[in-house]
Each structure stands twice: as C-alpha cells, then as structure tokens.
Image 1 (cartoon, rainbow, N blue to C red):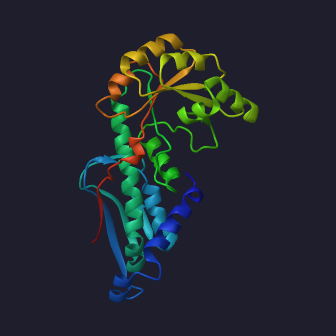
Image 2: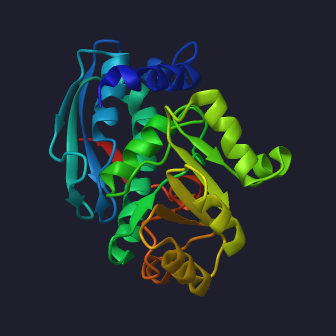
Length: 275
C-alpha cells in the first residue's frame, strides 16, 4: 500500500504521543547519540504491518535506518529478529511505541484472520466488517488481507448494505431496494440483510448482488443455499467464532463476515530492544 494512504495515521499518532517532546529521553541522551535496536517477535505468528512500522520511524526522522528481515504475510517464530533499527536514540525511542502499537495490532488481526481462514471449508471466504477502530480502518482491513481474508465494503460510500433498520424504516425489503435504485441506478453493488427464509425469498425477487443471512442457524442456512441455488452470493453473519466457522462454511454459503477480526483482536507480542 502506498504510504500516502496511512502516513497521516502515523503523523497523528506521533503527535498524540510526543506533543512537546519526549521528557525522559531528552533528559538522558545527547541529541546526536546513536543507537542500534532490534525488533523481536515474542510469539509465533504472522507479520503484518512491518512497512507501517518502518514508516513510523521515517515520519519522525528520515535518517533512521530500518532493515526488514521479514515482509508482510511471513510466518515468524518466537524470538526471531524481525527488523533492525539504527539511528539517533531520540528518534528510535520517540517512534518506538507508535511503531509497535500499529504493528502489534495489524499482526494480531492477521493472525486471527488466518485462524478463521484455516477453518473454512469449500468455497467460503472470510470477510471483515466496518467494526474497526475509528481512523484505523485502512490498516485494519489491510491486515485482514495479509491474513488471507477478503475486504467487505470499506465504508458507507462504496456499497449499499440494506439492514434491518433500513428495511423497517422503508416499509420492506422491496421498497428499500427501490429507493437505492432510484438514488444510485445500481452504479454500486447492493446487498440486503435477511433474518428468515420469507425475507430471503422476497430479496431474491429484487435486483441485488448479495444477500446476508443474519444470525441463522446452520440448518436454515443450508435451506437458504438450496433455495438460492447459486443464483446469488450468500453471506453468513452474526456472532461467528472459531468454534462455529467450520460448520457455517459447510452450509454452502459464499462468505462469512466476522466482526471479531477487528473489534476484539488480541495484539501480537513484539519487543524493541536496544542492543
């Protein structure tokens, strides 16, 4: 990804952290003192966000040298040296926390996504959602891709997703779809959420591109797959876990969307140590 798409995230994070200066480091170290540090994995996992990690140092000080031993998507082992950093100690320690925070979150998302993907059977693909940390969506969704998942819509603007509240307020599925068609002339894809098979049958009469099966049990989803008969893509959604993903994928749905990929992720453990 071009750094211009996420550089502002790093700039804002560095400003939040440093503000008027790094009190501890500036009191201890001369401005010109140099150091060498290593980024070390503290668990097995998938590296994700290593380019963002490097960019955090460059945003603060373009003279910092960052040598990457792993690339995004690589599997690493506990205690492996992922990268080496050389430069002014004030710059290395100044960017350390922001660089690590972003790397740890992205790697955690990639690791969790990979676990879901491994459990999926058949044609089913793992989708993310909009349940991302505000202002980090581009990084969260990038991490899902690195982990082997697929991005759903990026925001409210690139795809119409007609959900329960839209349907109730519009007076029904057909009415809601017609409003979208009148407004956008189907220039962007349309997905509609259904909660039962009657709503599924109504959605199938509408010119939509995907149907979301919301909180249906596996038997009902299998029946939905049979009714649909490959006429349209089906997406399963609702409280999906590592324990349930395999069974859901075996129903024959095309996608399963998982909010937990980004809203409940556990950060991967790394350390940055001066050597």
